[in-house]
Amino acid sequence: MKRVLGAAGLTFTLLTTLWVASAWEPDRSVDSLKARWAAPPSTFLPLDGMNVHLRDEGSRDDAVPIVLLHGTSASLHTWDGWTAALSKNRRVIRFDLPGFGLTGPSPTSDYTIAAYSRFVVAMLDALSVKRCVLAGNSLGGEIAWATAVATPDRVSALILVDAAGHRLRSASVPIGFRAARVPVLNKLFLKLLPRRIVTSSVRNVYGDPSKVTDELVDRYFELTLREGNRAALPLRFEQAVSGANEENVKKVTAPTLILWGGLDGLIPLEHAALFAKEIAGSTLVTFPSLGHVPQEEDAAVSVAEVQRFLAAQRPPGLP
Image (cartoon, rainbow, N blue to C red; front, side, top):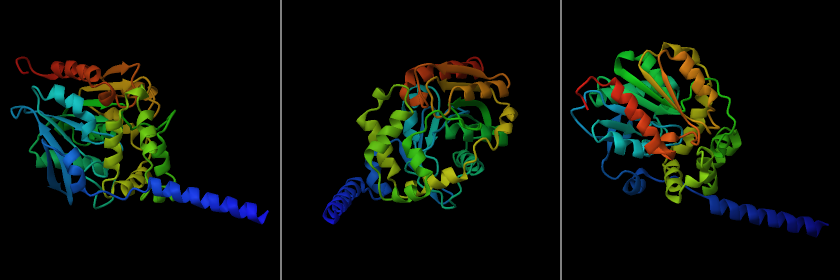
């Protein structure tokens, strides 16, 4: 019996060692990631102790640029398709939020919505943008509407894409997000990151998981490894209080377009109806076959709704 137990223990130890070795992923420096993920037109803007990864594209004659805010564990690349379409005649600004992408962690470790909103306003100031169309997906959506409430003079129109902000009633949560909330497990993931967890997490937020390519997984995987990002994610979740400021949604006064994936399990469609009910005069468009990231899963279909909305906001004679 002792020999059997000893052999079982040895096998378990060996398998565990092999698993740790296969999943071992140390942090990667920004410099090592730049060649693939920060090619032109990427630039870096020093702000509040960070070098913010930024892309500022399109017409410099646009007095009211479009500013795009990504969601949790995403990056400015989630807006590639929208930017390609919108920058033909509009100025489009997007950047990696603190804690994510190549911008990396906040030096203050403050990942509250209020801190993110202040960061967005500071970015607008640094770029000399007085007013903008502000769009955001998921976490970025909550930051967008919170910023529109806090500084209504800076936001001419609002676009919410599967936005957070109401008390969450998720039907399905990506495994990576669940792991980041478990105290002991999230410490292990400071050094370990099995690629299959990233693959599963990205597939989870798509309505059609077959659209998730190896290159897409590469992007999420490698940018998660940016030094400091894995340590920032649990802090973001610790500081997030679901629905804490939902009463403020009613204070949005900007013209608002609400876009939602009908197959979103993370922030289900019922949340779209809440936003539409609470934001006076808002327009709601749903995409029955898309998931939590419509701007990424089907950029052409989702940006077409944005273009229609923006055309209605522009004074006659302007592009």
